Image (cartoon, rainbow, N blue to C red; front, side):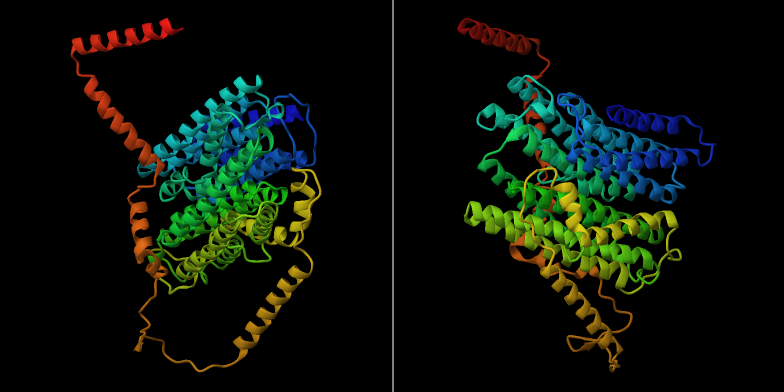
Length: 594
């Protein structure tokens, strides 16, 4: 099995190199190489998924957690490649694109199977480089967002290396399955925070999230669907699970910190999503918000909540990837993702609309789709935590999660109305359904939302519960689900009956004035009152000015100290000699003390 993993890593890398060196005159070969490679990776993911066990102390680890993460990587790699066959057809950078995609898959495979922290850090670091390269494909406007992404992710990668060094100093080993330390000393806490920052930055949790909205308006939509929507979520939360379940033995304070980060990320990001007028930027904030549920579930500190967080990791990758791919299809035809310039596309692109609608309901936690059940497990984990340690904070976490779901649904009502159900706009080109290769991936992902929703019990009990062995009191299916299905059936029957009744059609009125046909209620007006409310207005203004952006904060600190040190470098030789003498005196004092 270890040889197969190595072969997959090497083959993906070599395939990427081949795509770069094959002349452009050779038609379809590069696409074929990318498609065949991702298909082989997908088949290998299915084959490895049924395998268990590994040799302790080996370079690679293939337990249930790594297998699930790897299978997710292979699925999204294949679907993104299929989507890109049409999406990248006439783009100049498609050769670079396929190369970077395959290199990303190679590094992602290596990262989830690495049992040695140095090997893991190598793959993790290369993932940051390929992320930068893929984001930078968006053209001249993408250079600054790509730089910001590289600095945030690369900066936390530096903390990752520091944390690994501290772990080695504490344990004398780099093997993940041999490390399990108590969080008692300051140096152990330092190692934990270093590793935590790397996982949160990769997943896109606050406060390391700002690179995701920044790249959303310039990066190709397939890159957004592949990295911040799916692959980076899988890798970031995978590593967070390793930190919590393998590397450290937590106490109450650290679980509390994770819950706080998760709850804050949910509410703050969904509030930002609510007022966005660009669909891709709105989806990017939801990509951040959904990470909060995963962190909150893991932070519950009990098996049900942790497994719920991992289940939500999988579900979110599925429907968020489908949402980005769906809006990418709309952008391909309408040439815009601004809400004010979209409308009436549902009738023109019914398949894309159906897939987008199902995925929107799934991310909003509407039963019986997959998003509902993973969120319900997280709620159940929080309730279990409240039983074992009753205090007021548990109520806050639960309320934050519920508010997040409600506002998520509200923001997607805005998107669906504006893009698919609103008044038809004038478009430069004829709007029609995109090609099969662009329709197939979001449709398959939306079908997965339904299948996993109805078959969640078998999926969770067979695959996810094995990550944390034990017995669990997990009850959703049964009378409650039957009642949900009956309620949905009654709703559909009621809708059919009401729709069949003839009604009198009269003009529309707003404030006593008749609404003319040419008048249009744009989705950009939805929830504008929230944006203009006193407290929220100030917060939104601060957010737009990037006051809360950790990148801008860090840049300000660097420039501040840069100005100070610039005065010290005056070019006067006497000043430099004075500093040298001062340094020698300090060193002499230190050596005398020793």
